[in-house]
Image 1 (cartoon, rainbow, N blue to C red):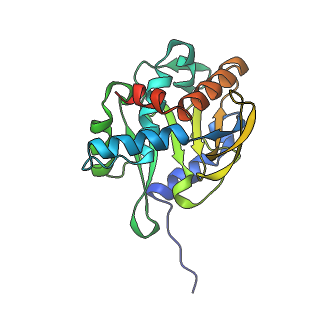
Image 2: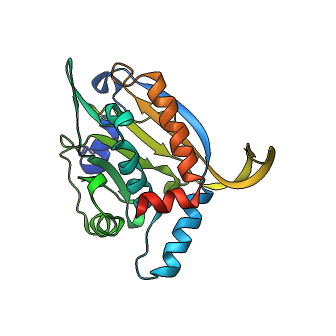
Length: 225
């Protein structure tokens, strides 16, 4: 006999994220980035504090909070209510967390831009699932932990912007400073925005700044401090 069940928790989250009619118009931009700086920063922090166990997701969370709190990127940290755009000072990130045995927990981490990386790490580890996304001002999805290379776009109704990170792998990348191709830890990054809220100048600049930070260990450590 057929069975039926209601979508709940993370399933409900992903169903909502794919319903573009509810989410509103969306524009997605993809860029291949080097993550060498983030990886080296994590290794350095792990040597100094081996019990801290900072995950790539937590580091990305802190980096996003720091960038989104910059005045030039405020509009990325917005919600849309019908024809009203609400821009926030606090960066509240909706974050899917992939637990054991394939289970996904979706949490909202509030005030990311005001918390230390240690506080964020503790909060993410102990967070319980919640389906109230009305406080979320931004969506961050780390698809790499699922082995996914890239996604064309993911969003949530009411949230103006999101970033999805693909699987980090070794690959060739052009080093402008040295004018040659080098091997680096690379991944696709997809920025999805509501084009009514976020202009093309902001999206391009944000992706460029994010790429510069993730490739540079010192810049990552500076944002994490």
